[in-house]
Image 1 (cartoon, chains in turn purple, blue):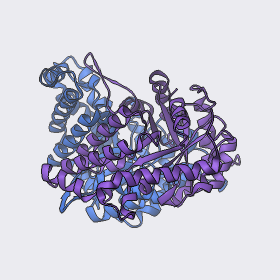
Image 2 (cartoon, rainbow over the protein chains, first blue to last red; image 1 turned 30 degrees about the horizontal axis):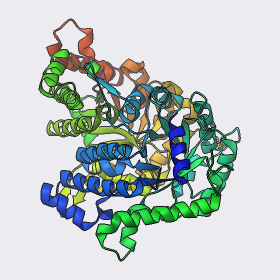
Image 3 (cartoon, each protein chain N blue to C red; image 1 turned 180 degrees about the vertical axis):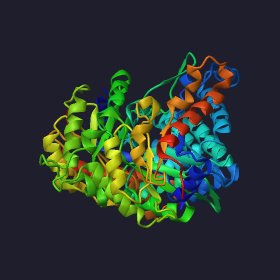
Length: 310
Length: 310
């Protein structure tokens, strides 16, 4: 069960965080972009080369500190198929370095199509008599709007290929309440209803440490809901965005954890990727600055939740 | 306003349908696959080459009959970045042939990230001093679960670049009601609430023919809801999946149209792509079979709704 592997990584490194790899060109040091543009021109291929070099440096610096990375598909698609190739190469490189990869695609569709997304991001596909790995992440974020049909094809692949999913429950953005906080006639909000489905969907993927292969995305920017969901969804592991640049701090994420310091992995993207822009160090030290920020974040969170034990 | 262009194409061809390009290898004639595998091996590159040749043949045969195509991202991602390159090439080819391209990605995320998806699929991105087009579709399908933050970045690009979006409202799959049909305390269902947001979001993108740049996805498999939504969402154009292989027929989609025969575009994917598998003709005639099925579908729908007028 894939989230078991994530949990084991968290315990080993005593670090319940994930580094979001959202590499806009604005976040990338000039020397990397200049090199890439010299080789490939100011093209999508050049942008993709810069993304990949930036990411590899970050992964090298972070892999002994942070157990997981979360590449956000949008920032790769923004640079065309060339950017999507950089996504593939980033996933491969991070996995080679022993990191758990959460592909943040928030994919969703009807069952037959979701089968294709599940294959794309977590499985293997037959090409003639050969099986190929399209992207090869360890987990995928997904959107629940279409109901169970859009989730079940993922569960089969998670079971067969030892992978996991994170379902959007309560997102970190300012307008997340517009639909998610509305209360149904039965008395539950939309996000609570989706949370209950996560527990149900997870029943078929039990894990060694009490958490299933079906996780939930719950934002650090809503600590009250985080507290309630942690209390109610006892088998659902949380991916918690919204720490750092979006405004969430260590005290906001504490409710996401259980008494063993397990139950959640906290994401930070911009605060890690752009750490170098806040230092006086040469831009060549961008990965060092990212590692320092990752350590600071780890220490801040671990000092708030205590030692993490299985 | 981009949906105006779609509407003009529908009226010109007197055909309110869109061909879904969901090219699984299983749907592709052997001779195309053999040629691609001979050249590239049984690799993702080989699969992508087969996809693209299949699509080009379909586009050549359909472009004088059907005003729009809807490539489904999942079926390209399933063949890795190589498949995503075939998506890019398919979009370019269809646009060269004058077709309106709806990229079916059901993308969704928080505002800053949605900006990246909007740029990826509908906009242009700066690489150094050069502007590049990552995918270049005319419209994108999106998922509303995150609320207005996740939609507004798209509206800006739609206005600047003459593009449109289709928001998931009531999807065609069997479990779509699990969340979408639940009734909030105010008496409206989730899908009705999203429908009302579509009208609101569309206010900033008014169109020449009464329909805004914010469309809605409403499945042919739920004709009753289709009827109610058409009645209530007077400025929202519908993308209607679920016709053909999913079970919807011409009488099911009639409620999607207004009295001018406008207001909706009906998608069929498998029934068109796989038409050749139901004939005795040689597989080389796959595109001809697709065109025949597209004409049959057009005639069936138009005979039910009458002449389409602006």
